[in-house]
Length: 420
Image 1 (cartoon, rainbow, N blue to C red):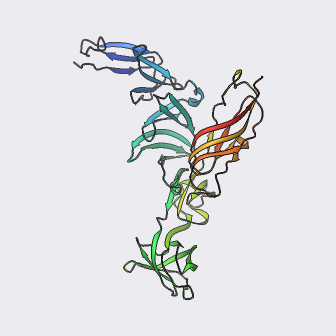
Image 2 (image 1 turned 180 degrees about the vertical axis):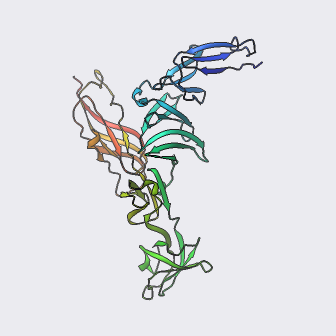
């Protein structure tokens, strides 16, 4: 016998609970009680367990339900998770996976190649859907446990080629590591290394501490005290002597430079990136040292940059678009939904963000001002909105650069005609 054991069965026309004759009775070969709990029916997409809640896709592939015990009815009840977002599953759900870390997110693949996410906090009754559209069609999704957070892996069909890709961790650390392109690659020139000596010779000889550079590298030098003629320039490394920890700067005559005093670093940089054959002929987004670069076309598997950079991400473009639900406040005469109103100003709370646009219409968004330096920003940004008078009160956000953007809160200032 199996005391206090029960299990669920999801069929094409109903959801069943199998157990003993009562909730306290064991299952035995001659005592099994099957009781129908709901009658939605399940598709052939595997159900998943999120905490103590079963999430499954209804038979026709359009509705998603949660299946859990409720004390009020002393039974297991199916509740719709797509009730307020019925449009999001157009094309039908064909695959599903659950990511626990860093946040509980259920990933879905639609039959038309669109990837969906549903942020799901059952205790707080948070069900937040979004779509992810790429150059190509998502075919499947899977979750692999990583060292710090769950990794999201996908199969994507682009033309006649199939790509196995994974999403970079959301907690990226410093801005240089922020990766916001699809199907992309990264060039990393490594951390800056310390300079311990510089000769007033022809050519200049650099003594360094750290790992060895390679002949032919291009390096950017800064922070030298004394021989500051070398600062802020790019040089070619030649004649590396790993035993003596020295290398020469090709063609640089330092005999008339000021004497070296102390300090300085060198860092590998490039002005082109190869290895992008899988994106041949595509126009790609490029992020260099934590800043947006002009778009580049991939020719012979390579892109050419407008300068020298140390860390470069290049890949397919995508945009973040957000339209919150219509603004609602209580007025003297009730809801503001049908009343004439105008958004006069807008304050947005950001986390680790570089750049964003906002406006009343998607094609009329304007840049929010984050300051002169393109650094990661966390805090509030205010802007004059100047929305039109109407019953909508819409707000659009667009982020079209390969840089991070996280919106935590939206705080509009309204002018409402409370008499209509």
